[in-house]
Length: 581
Image 1: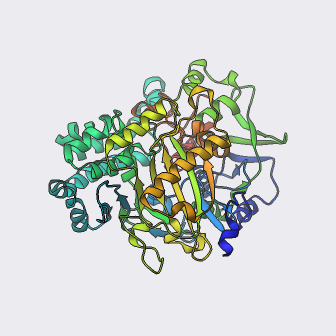
Image 2 (image 1 turned 180 degrees about the horizontal axis):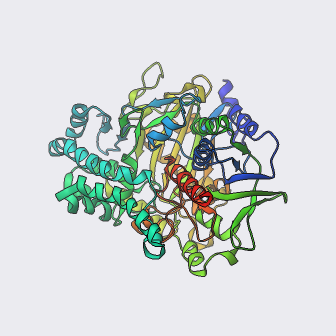
Image 3 (image 1 turned 60 degrees about the horizontal axis):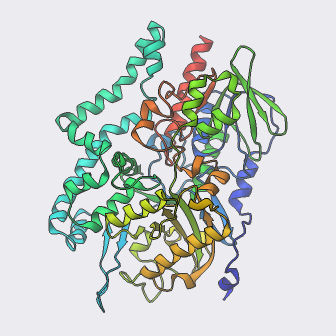
């Protein structure tokens, strides 16, 4: 079989998406632009697209050979196209989808329904098929599924979803504007103070929506998600399935205070007008980045790949005047927006003498712990789960399009996986979110084959006993993950053609994610809203005049949302306009 010849082939190879991205950067590099954007991650591309539409001549410099940052499609095993880092879309702000005409620029989505599948491992089941939990958009069907575990929970579930929807409605406006500018309120001139008061509007609106229920909603933000879910439900499989959204990407246990906000961050999205929908991007996540880039370049923006920014250039008067590239070339600009993390931006690219010592210290102390190891897998057939065996035809079934949650029978399993990582050990029974985008987008893999995304945790950045994340440790962990999958879907290991293992240090090295953190920094309450990345510098501006953050390290945080890029572009445009005035 031809597919068998691919087994163990794990080296990257070029694909059309790479070549197309590289071609974006062709053309003459000019010595001066109005704005420079560091990094062609999706937020940087969004910022460039908005600035260019507003008449600000913008250039984007990307150090890799491919645009997209973590939202990228790469061919790791020949013939198999992976969303190598981020792998699902939901949080992209609707106005970005509309304003940048992303559908016109080629963006196509495959919405998922059902969206969540949790198979059980049940000892003593004998010949009985193990139970599973399948959740989607049909309320009655969800209740039927949940009732297999608890009639009480089945009745409570619609009320729980309505409760969360109201909180999402309140928080939603906060995502699309800069946070309250505390620096202007405290230190600005009278006009600046009065103008900054307008940023209180979304907060006041949120308070009106929540009204008398504010204390209950406040608990969702600050309490452990285990406590929140325990208030609503009694069945462990349901609670554990819902808890995954509260800890995914975060070095948190379900028992960690504040884990509720991470859950909220994962249910506040919408796609094509459907609240809470999640989907796969046709062609992989890189196709989203290419659509944004196409929108930006159609209006005149320039994007260059394999152009690494070495440092931000500062004038003698302490104002940004451009960047210096790694090859020594200088590019002048009025402003610089960094899509890189706060740590890279302020600790590596910015001359330290222009930054206050207290600010530098705060940036260096940001919590960037990450529990994530991403494993991309090429297989020659779909996994067949004991709880939902494959059809004789081998064609995808509804549960194959879901986020498939493994080792999620109960919250204690998730907590123990977290405890392992705290001790410096990769989880012995890791939490696994398994997705098969080729179940809806067959062009990602050769006929009959599939690409599988394994988002696993918990794995510490630094291993105990002085061990390093070398190839032996990486493969040992991946083998453990595969053993877990094999227990739910016998035959899985025999289907594997190749794999790509990305531990926290790999995610940091390849994608510039500090500590491997997919959000550029923990989404904990002390690092959100007007404290992101640090207090008094949450308005996308930095202490250095003309230097701005536009990536996930700024408000409103991580996820393929684009809000940070859009919000930063509008702040920059207003500052440029005021300067001209």
